[in-house]
Image 1 (cartoon, rainbow, N blue to C red):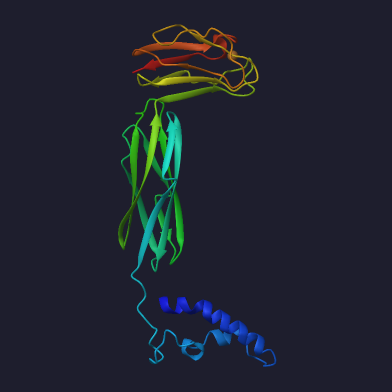
Image 2 (cartoon, rainbow, N blue to C red; image 1 turned 45 degrees about the horizontal axis):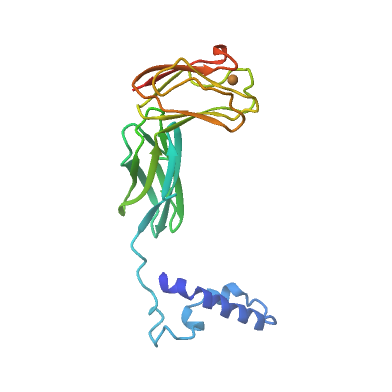
Length: 255
Ligand SMILES: [Cu+2]
């Protein structure tokens, strides 16, 4: 198959010139010229006088490759990361099963779909979604995707870094309505909590207190954030000072 494929550009050129020259010839179309034996119109530079079958070789061994993008994702707690898994076939078609290793126990990995059908000499993709809960481990992981199919197992890796940061945002339009933060929130000791004002209205963080989590002194304008790092395990309680505990209280547990 491979030598024939390599000749295609030349065939197309020759066929094109013949098509111009052959305009007066009824019934002489490009397809019939191109479909003939390569020897008929070959320039001969890769055929040193062999018979008509000299260019015929066995097809390549069925195989496939797997790749993973992007190579690196940097994110924080309570987020999802998405990788695209791409499978490229060489003379292979069939199903490929996907599995991930290297994912920390406190993160979850989900393929969509888990089994991919790869077309002959074509390409198929799947998505790998890594979910990182608020109370997950913040670390750097080397995530490997193992693809298993009849030609064997192929693998690809990518890096993922989760920093010990968690962002809660009062979104645009919050005003004096429900402020939308979780009622209960658990994080690990050492987490930096970013409370961000994405609203046009001013907001301020009320804290009942606790090490590393003081009440905020001033209102925050749009785009500002208040960063606290609770200094000990235990319970904390906060809500919006400007709009009151009726707009939503968060009970924070630091473990
Ligand atoms: Cu508020």
